[in-house]
Each structure stands twice: as structure tokens, then as C-alpha cells.
Length: 237
Ligand SMILES: Nc1ncnc2c1ncn2[C@@H]1O[C@H](COP(=O)(O)OP(=O)(O)OP(=O)(O)O)[C@@H](O)[C@H]1O
Image 1 (spheres, rainbow, N blue to C red):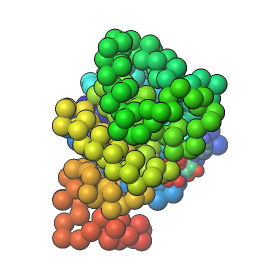
Image 2: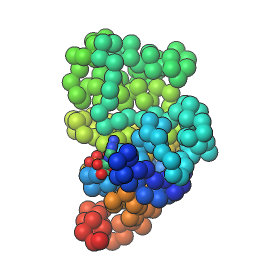
Image 3: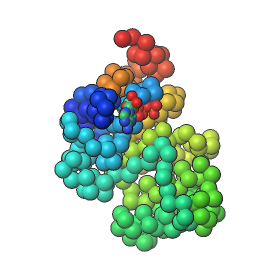
């Protein structure tokens, strides 16, 4: 579903944020992308989502290069940034319908998805309100619902649990598990290692722009814990 091949990104000014990254995620995988601040997670995620240009390597979604056909890739992908920028002057429901229109989701499918996820995330009563009146967590919930309307084959989330209350975090985890059971793949970054350890069947640890560990969670962790493995990797040069 996702193949990252020799991907590197150097920002203007010469900062090489990601250096020769290779990894592969399949349908049904929940992949947790771990790394210290500035390790290169958001850079990778933004390139995957088609919102950041890059010169070196390629990123293939469902077999299609994000460089060669970004529109086709975006049709099967949903991306929730760490700080979603929503259209504040719209109501929640108008925003969801706007996204449904962009992805050409039939109105009955759209209504079902909105009802299901708004109820699960307890946002139904607020959908008629303007987004400008939403709290940070409510905006995040709306962004999550909007990402699920077209049933993406690849769901990309940057720090999805930050700002969500414990119940909403629990609900989101269940939604992620269900989505993967239905054949989607999920790629998310997090600093919450306990969540990654419990939720993910695959883990990648990025350090200084390079992949320091990658594989099935059990293989990466062994007899240790993700926290211990992470600390060992980060502290060795
Ligand atoms: N627009 C930019 N211009 C120049 N350098 C950048 C830019 N964006 C990120 N960087 C640099 O690239 C490196 C990787 O940043 P990135 O945002 O990908 O890290 P991250 O792993 O997501 O970090 P965090 O956990 O703090 O969100 C950092 O050294 C950062 O300073």
C-alpha cells in the first residue's frame, strides 16, 4: 500500500531532514513512526501526503508515485496534520460535505459515515455550529471524521492523540483497528510509546533523518519495551 524508496529531503538552506529512507507498509498494517523532536517524521509524512516536494527517491501509494500522479494518490489517501487547518467560517457539517464533494462520495455513503463517526466521537450535536467556535479537540475530531468519509486505503496521521480527551483517544484507536481490519493501512507518528507498542503491528524508529529500526513490533521490541529500545537507540551514536 505504501512504499518509500530511498527518500531524502533537503530543505532550502541545506538542512537534510530525511536521509535515504526505505520502508513498506501493507494493507491491514498499523504502523507507528517514532522519533525524537526534529528526527524527520513530519517531513516524511508531508512528502507522503503530497504537500511537500522532494527530489531524491520516491514514494508509492497503492503502486502509484506521489511525484508522477499526486491526484491519484490523494484520492486513496487521507492525511490529518498535527494542527489541522480547517475552514473556520464553515459549520462542521458544511465542511464535511465540502470534503465529501471533493472526494465525490455518494450522499448516502457520506451521511452514513458522518453519522457513524460523529456519534462515535460525540460531535453530532456540534455539527451545525461554526468551526470557529470549536475547541482544539473538537477541530481535531472534525478533521478525523473528514478523513474517514471516503474510506481511505491509506490513512496518515501526524500525532493524532495530542489534544484528544481519553475517551476520544480510545474511540480513535478502535476506529483505526476497525479500518485496518477492513483492509486500509495506517501510518501515524507519535511520541506516546505505550500507545504505539499496544496499537501497532509494525514500528519504525527514525533518528537524525535515518531509519534506525523497522519491522514487526514484536521483532523491534524483543524481550524489552519500546521505551527501552527507543532510549537505547537514541543514546547510542
Ligand atoms: N520548512 C523547513 N525549513 C528548514 N528546515 C526544516 C523545515 N521543516 C523542518 N525542518 C528541519 O527538518 C528537521 C526534521 O523536522 P521534522 O518536522 O520533520 O521533525 P519531526 O520528527 O516531525 O519533529 P517533532 O517531533 O518535533 O514534530 C528538523 O531539523 C527541522 O528543523
